[in-house]
Image (tube, rainbow, N blue to C red):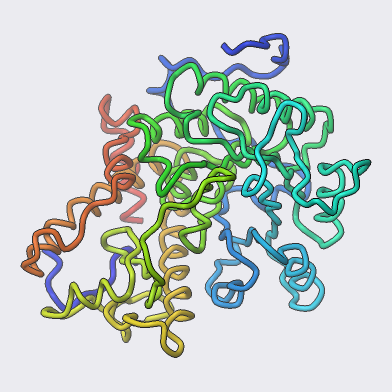
Length: 425
């Protein structure tokens, strides 16, 4: 179910010598009216990740979310303190057999450099230890599906750091390692930077887990960031997108090998090391709740305030089951935080099931585009029903996905017909 049921009516890069001549070239931009290339198929243990949207979560919150995971379409990315310990416990004690990754998240505290693309995250590391080798070995020891590189934060257009990281991973010659690419969103600002990012990422044999850095919502920082992200996904075989939000669905629709949605605002983007995260002041007295119709998260207290004079939507997700309304998460008392977290994941899994039921390619891209457009169009209607013109404001990223139509949509109706057929079936 896409919408919650409501009580009210819902009316050049330098270094070209690095490029492997045997690697397939990106499709020329003039060819983007044709269906996008099929995603690179993952091999070995990694094949289980193909086409999934994982949840990126702190170890302490796994219990809130695990019960709502779609076993055939999702999995977990553990991030933060005790991630390795929790992964070991999940495998050995809690019988979790689904896809499981550990993100070392070194990028939160250290930047990559040409000399140290994989910097030590702790002063306790011995000088003779190789941070990359140590991290990969530690992850394998706890039973992850595949180890992820402990890459430092790659600042905008820091090509030396990016090339150093790529060279090192390429030298591993191991397609079962996930290359973490925590890049500043500035890489998506200009054409030249995007071309360089694509050329570098294509040198890595295995999957590339792109994560975007920037304050608040990185994809709203630059006018063409969404279009450029989609281009990277389409032109880099094995590209994945982690630690993100709505873009997890947009990237999966565009052909990403897999994605990960952050279960918490802090896990939906990266703040560059040394910067303080820009956020709302004060301690949140209520959980964040996903309002499915509007495709955005709001504090439960905010929803309760907005619907104080009108019946709030009743949610029909697998957790709320048509009993809980969206204004019932107004505090952190009792079971509300856990229920809100489970509600959020249940709604995301519903969207995921719908998306993955559609044939990959243009039909899937168009479905995503139409869902974003529909959500944008709901905002003024909901505000009018509440008689509060500015009650809810369209998030900039949602608006940009709604404007980012697949390239072929304007050139014919084939994609529309396919999407309509999938929705009816």
